[in-house]
Length: 558
Image (tube, rainbow, N blue to C red; front, side):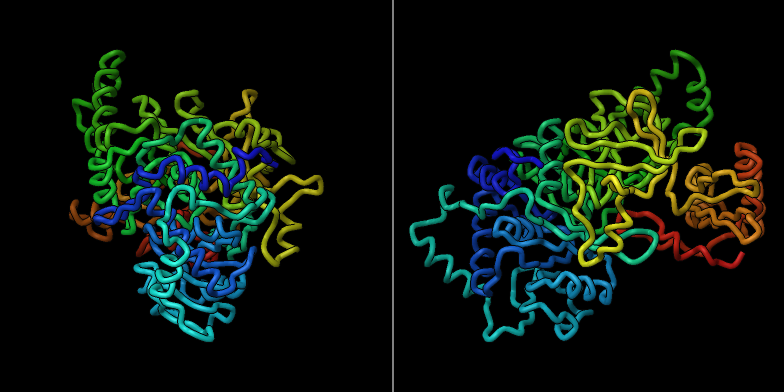
């Protein structure tokens, strides 16, 4: 347990608000709405008064659901520093799922984007006393004995801070790190979400690591496009950034590569957090067309000459991301091996971390400045996390289990799932398969639940086959499934923009995919061979962190 005053999670923000009072804290990107640390602290104080008016007590739950914006950040910080428990809900959840989470978590207040609330009903959220807009904190619905509007909050604020709201006004709840900070409902790819009970200690461990490694610092600039309701973006683009005195530019729109590249050029972020999909799209659009041209493709095969080309491509890519970042951290899903190999070859400052919601999220990571190994996701966080492999096969591959400061205490109101998620000696089962080398670097091979068995019991990791398929022309994404008679079939969603641009007919596309199957099989063991490729008409349904929901496609007719 992190017990020093410096590591107390609530006190981190009490201290940061006071020390960074006049600095910019958060901006709604594309608008004029910016809050300094002082103004953000005042908004937090207003919400504290709202909570008090509703009789909110310590450990009461408050839910927030919507796209990234300054008010989302305010609700999160206000809840934690008041002594409550925040329940972040991903904006991509369907209304029925969101209503279930609100009820299951027993949330007393709900802050939500207006458009999302239009598909919901107060009668369906039984424990909620009132619903407020994340756009302007307007009261949307209530079942309290009287309406409590933002005007009532302003009146209470002006009365309490008649002499003005100052640095000295910032005084927060005395909460030990053992107290519960959040309940995050997972967006897993294998079924119904579970509520991860995260103590403040797990949040503090991630933030402390970010500060100690100077991933963020006073005056740092973050382009925050990952959903804050997801543990990855929340931990570093928001919590660590604001604990350090950094400035987070919040992107509330769908983060297309075009929007992101524009934001990077304007803001020039000092750190970039991304999921693989974003980097892979930029690689495919910006780099692949260059390196496939005959002169460049030839030069890349010539020693010494290739270094000139690689340096030029690296500089072009660095400038596209704003030119001021220390490193790009990739997490949330595996990065395509071909993309990773090329970026490593050109010495692009990119590194991969590994984590899960149950660890808020970080487990392993090695900063770019400290080196690393190709296809690895780094080493266990020193002094914070331990990692080991259990039940390894003859190759050393087994389930990854972890323990340490960042680990959850269990799943909310789900003792059986909690019991199943830990080994008898207290290690958290990640559900991932991996191997650890002699230097302590972790290499993830796939999910325990997605691993397939060959006809003679061989282990098959579909993610590795999919990575090869996804590098092929006209392939947007793929999913490898297994039939009842152990045949492997690849479901492929074509890149229809590429197909249309090339003028391919349906028959020509099918013939091309057969050639793709043969090329991929040439690089696979006999027990990994694809029996066929089936064209899929649209993109696969994904979680908010862009992992394919595999469980939806296990029974597809092939």
